[in-house]
Length: 305
Ligand SMILES: NC(=O)c1ccc[n+]([C@@H]2O[C@H](COP(=O)([O-])OP(=O)(O)OC[C@H]3O[C@@H](n4cnc5c(N)ncnc54)[C@H](OP(=O)(O)O)[C@@H]3O)[C@@H](O)[C@H]2O)c1
Image 1 (tube, protein in one colour):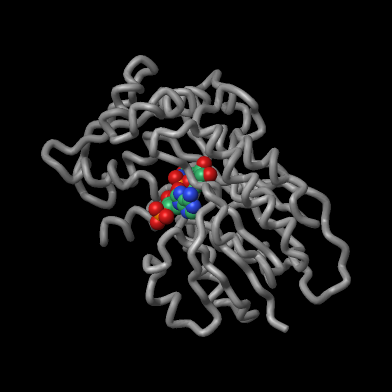
Image 2 (cartoon, protein in one colour):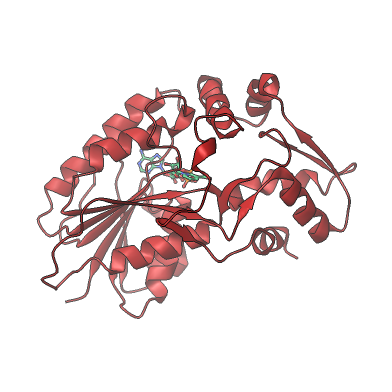
C-alpha cells in the first residue's frame, strides 16, 4: 500500500514546496493537502490522481482529518487578525494534537519550527513555534522538528526597491556585516518531503526518538551579501540602510505588519542581532542540514533574470 501523507496548511510556502517534491518522488505517496479554502489548491496539484485538497482550519480544528495518514507535516501558520499569537498557537497546536491522537495509523509528525524556538522568552513572534513545539513534541510515535533559517524568499521587497530610482533597501539587522542563517524554502520543502517519505510505513522499524534539525543555506548571509547579490543581478549599485533598534517599530509598521504584532517583530529581530538571545545559534552543527540553493539562484528567479 502506498504511503499516505497529510500536509497542513497545504497553502503554507513550506507545505507547497514539500508537495511539489512529493508529487515528483518515485515513491508516489498519496497526498492530502488541507486548505482553509481548497479552491486555492493549484491546478498542477489537483490534476494529479495521488493528490486531494480538503477543507480544514487549524484554528477552529474543523476538517483536520489525518485518518489513513502515515505521516503529517504541520507548518504552524502565523496569525494577522489581531488575536494574541501565543493564544492562537496554543489553540491551533492543541487542535492538531487532538487530530493526530485520533488517527491510529500516524507514525510520524514532521513539525516545521524556527531557529530560536527553544527559548521561552525574548523571541517575539517565534513564540508561535516555541508553543507548537512544546505541545506537539510527543503527539506522534515519531516527531521530527525542523528549524529553518530565514527564507531567502522573504526578501522580495529588497529586490523591488533596488530596481527603483534611486536603488536602495532597508534591512532590519544591524550591523550590515552580521551574517544570519538563511535558506531557500525549496530546500526546506525538499528536506521535509524526504523526512515524510522515510516514515517507516509498512516496516517494523521502531520509531526514532524526538529529533531537532536546523536547515540553513549553503552559508550564512549578511545585509552586505544581499546587497552584493542584488547589485550583480540588477547591474545597479544601490544604498543599503540597516535599521537601528529604535527604528524597527516604524520599519515593520510601514512594511504592513499589523499594529498588534509590531513589537513581536521588533523583539524577534533584536534577538538575531549581535548580543541577542539567538545570536549564538548561527553556527553549523552536527544536526544542521546544509541546503544547496544559493541566494543568487533564488533572487535571479524572483527577478525573472
Ligand atoms: N518566513 C520565514 O522566513 C520563516 C523561517 C523559519 C520559520 N518560519 C515559520 O514558518 C511558519 C510559516 O510562516 P510563514 O510566515 O512563512 O507563513 P506562510 O507559509 O507564508 O503562510 C502560512 C499559510 O497558512 C495558512 N493559514 C493561516 N491560518 C490558517 C488556519 N487557521 N488554518 C489553516 N491554514 C491557515 C494561510 O493560507 P490561507 O490564507 O490561504 O488559508 C497562509 O498562507 C511559521 O511557523 C514561521 O514561524 C518562517
